[in-house]
Amino acid sequence: MPVSQGFGDRAIGWRKSSYSQGASGCLECAAVGVRGRAVRDTKNRDLGHLAFGNGEWAAFLRSLQTEVF
Image (cartoon, rainbow, N blue to C red):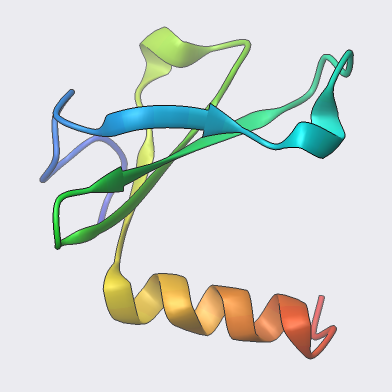
């Protein structure tokens, strides 16, 4: 999904990684109902977020686990 479309501000429970305590360049993630996940920059929250469907989010997590990045 494109930036800031589809979910609006209905994301529930923005969370920041426990590994980013004290760091200035962090992302927040939120579950958005049953539709997927949203990610935003903690320094620029007003700029919106990136939204991902469940399939896209699962593929992203798999790529992290298999060290594709």
